[in-house]
Length: 335
Image 1 (tube, rainbow, N blue to C red):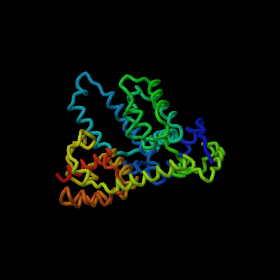
Image 2 (cartoon, helix red, strand yellow):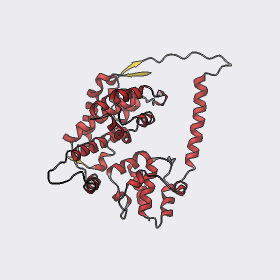
Image 3 (cartoon, rainbow, N blue to C red):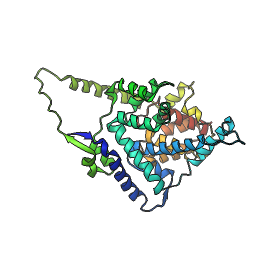
Image 4 (cartoon, rainbow, N blue to C red):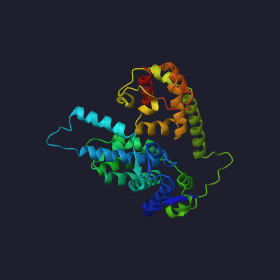
């Protein structure tokens, strides 16, 4: 069965889903903290967009700081504000009144980025002061990530909203992900809203191939599956030790985490970093991430820490930004 998104119903359905999530979340709490926030739903994308909204709000507030007596643009002041934000991110306390609109928007954006990515791009561009700010959004994108990676790579400093959409329209849409609509809603405990959000359409029946003919799409699928298996096996054979031995790393996210890790690893991380590691290295499993941190904290050396970390490596992309950042944390912890 094919499902066509009812765009006019996205906001209404998102509000219903958000209300249901908040009813359950705030049943026993008046406020929730950062740990609860990064695992609020079973959707990595929804959780990521919630974090995006919080940090976007912080950035707007900082940009409004002006004074005839103090230089808020000074390099040291900006560095101090960044450190303050890192501390603040570990002490989040948010009630339902302030969370619900953020959650509703995160759900709506997730529906669009999954099923209508171009419409998602249009709506986000309309909310941004300038199109180039979309590049800041990319690190929070989990669905259709390859598609939007190509977009931000081609965006320039002088692109307009119209030219950004033009770049998107010129992209190879084969990278667009295919997501099962019922399964998507079940993740949000909203399977009963399927027909509120989607129209059903019958799938066209494929033509019957001759006995000697193998359909091109079947052959392509077989080749793709074989390549995926080979790639997975290749990644699984790569360890953090191998990645560490490459050395000579360029300026990346790992090198931007400047503070010294001298306590437990978990205590040293900001909410943004915890969210990044949890979702990209531990498949959204907060308890598994905590288990990994606890095991690594018991190490006596960097080599031992790498060995312990490798026991949790179930196919990490060793060239990814997240692994680079994780290695940076281990290096400073055991330097």
